[in-house]
Structures are given as structure tokens and as C-alpha cells.
Length: 445
Image (cartoon, rainbow, N blue to C red; front, side, top):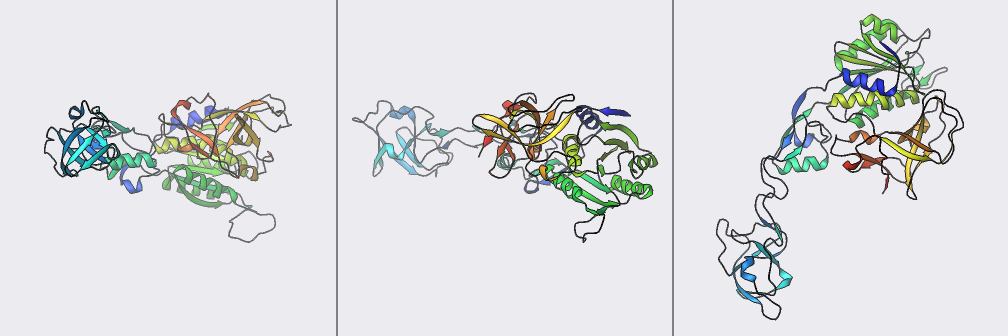
């Protein structure tokens, strides 16, 4: 077992210890937000024929040579609409076509309605047309064998549309990852219960469960577990049977009521690491039992959410089959300072915005371990190295983008924060920003 590991070491230890869940076939209608379980390739040409890009007339470009405003070329209108499939266009003819319709065989260009004059069955063309004008060629979008999306790619609306355009009504995806969540502590109450002296509401389950759903995983509620080794063993064992990953909050320190370590020993679990060099969230452990991973997080809600975001979320992405697992990094400039020194690596809850051409970082509130409210508008964690002094306004900082940045789907795309008035969030960017060491562009909308 490793002790006092870095965030990056913890990420790597867990991701390398896990394998993606099995794949299954689902209907395309239910595949959105899932991860492709195999590379999808095109079977057909899109478009499947040469089609008109405009309302106009399909003609043969060679028939318009020499056409001028003062001396038009006169063509005969052979038919209206694409009513002659398989019939070759005759020289000197024109066929009326609408946008998206196939152009007749032999035709190689389309002249717009507004550029011609029709009188009965004759058509005056006033300029020479190059071949291919206003024609969308066969297979311009896709050709048989073209890659639509690789295995490990998130099925976004655009991917779903392209799959549909290839007639793929069923696709292979990784099944939903199940995350069992167990919250330990005699002091915890379910939010539906009335308040009691000395008790606190179990906020962390609902925060972690909501994040699991955002990631595309399914939370499994193991309930509030009292500070009892036998009961904790039973709950963890149940989680191992029902889910792909077990997350426990509370009971991971070394106090009298911290029962998780004894419970894992009772289960015969193999430890992976204990304690992570970060603040908040350093009380953390990970173990493996029957090929599944058990992660113990701090019972402090804010610390647990930060640890979950940086260390458990990459593991979930790995189980989901995503190729990209870790959150991207950003560079920015502090707007407000942080007065405390950081003897150990510290993560500050902040919001990253784009303003006046700069990436600006504003703290979202108090940074003490017991404060959960500052997670509400937090879309970034400022990474303060161990041994740092206070952070001053205007100081350059780096950190991790968090939240819905998980929807990055591998090497093809990257994600950037987008600031919505009154709410922090992220949106899709370009694949130019793949390198986690490069700054991430912030966009307003």
C-alpha cells in the first residue's frame, strides 16, 4: 500500500487498476450520453447521389459555354423535378430541380432560378457555368469506410445524428456504470427527517449522486451506515455485489469512530493507497476486492466533493470506457487574494470567467473545510503548490476545470468553461486545446 500519494499518483493508481465495464447493444434513441463500445464506420455515401444545393435548373456545363448577358444560351426544359431517375440528360436540355433533389444523370451543374428566364419550354442562361456549381457531390459528407466516431467516444447529439444518417438504429455502447455510495456516521439524518439535537443532514450523498448522474453513471444508495464495523462490512459487501465501484464517506481517519479501515480488513480487501497530499480531502483511502475498487473519502462534504471530482471521477470515466479520464487544467489570473499560506498542496474553490481578454479566477466563498456553499458556483479548483505563501490579486494561477467538463469525449474534442450569467458552467471547444498543460479558452454566451 502507498502512503501520502499525490493527486496525480492517486488518479493513475486507480485508473490503472480498473477496466471498462462490458458493452451492450442499445437503440440509438437511448444511446445519447453513452460511450461507444466499438468504432463506428460509415456504410453508405452521404449524400447518396449528386444533389442540388439550390432551387434552379440542372444543366450540362458545356452547353452554357459562350453565354453572356447580351447573348444568352437557349436551352429546352425537358422536365420539371427529378422525375427521370436513371434517365440521362440530353445535350441542350435543362431540368427543374429543388434544393436537395438528385440531379439527373449527365447533368453536372445547377443554375439558380434568379439567374435565368423561362418562357414556356425554353430557358435563357446568361452566363457560362463551371461544372459542379451548386451541386453537392455524392459522398461529400461521408463515404463507405469513413470513421464516424472511435470506440470510447461520448455519443453527443452530433454523433447520434451522423449514426442515424447511416441507418444505424442500434449501436454498441458501454453499459451504465453503477456507483454504490455509503455514508457513515451516527450523526447523519436523511433530508426527509425532522431536525434532531446533535444531528446533521446527509448532504454529501445527494451531491455525489448528482455528480454521478452528470458523469453518466448510476448511483446506488447504500444508505446511512452507523459507526459499526460489522454493519459497515455488510454495506460494503452489498455495494460490491450491486455496483462496479463503492464510495464510502466518513470513517477514514484514525479516530475511535473511524471504522472503514477495520471494515476493509474484515472484508479482506487489498489496499491501494492511504492518504492523499491535498487540502481539503487528505483523509482518503482506496482498496480492491474481487476486482472492484472501494474508495473512502472524508466525511466533510466539501472535502469529499473535491476528492471525488479529482480522483474518483477519472476512475468513473475509465469504467465508462472514455479515453480521456482526467479533468483539463487551466491558467488564469486571480481577481481576489487568499491570505493564508499553504504548507501543503491546497485547492481553492473558484469560478473561472473570461473578461476583458483575460481568464479571471474569483473565489466562490469561504475556503474552510466545513463550508459547502462555496461549491455552488465553483467550476474551477485553483491548485496552490505546497510551501506557497499567500496568493495576491493579479497573481497567475493554474488549476483544474471541474463540473460538466467530464463530457469531453477523447482526443477529438476538448471543453472550455462558458460563463452563463449567474451560473458557472462549461461548454464545448476545439481539439486545439488537448494538451492539459496549455491554457483553456473561456467563452461567454
